[in-house]
Image (tube, rainbow, N blue to C red):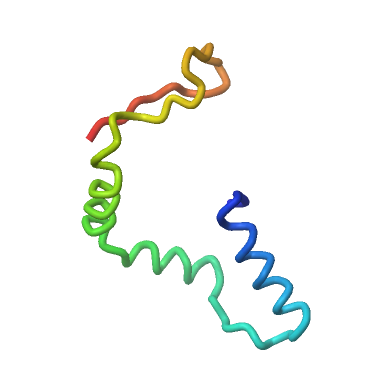
Length: 79
């Protein structure tokens, strides 16, 4: 993911490693990341996000009135 939130910390980490190789801490590989994700409690995550999103009136309508495209699925998911 490369968005406005993830790029700055990624670049800080990359530049720190570039200027002082080997000083960063090992985060493991992709398999380690998948194991950490699999070990998470999905119920806790669901409760946290439900509490964060509870006060919203509905889905974000950034492109209100858009014309659906055959390249993307328009799907509404309800809890």
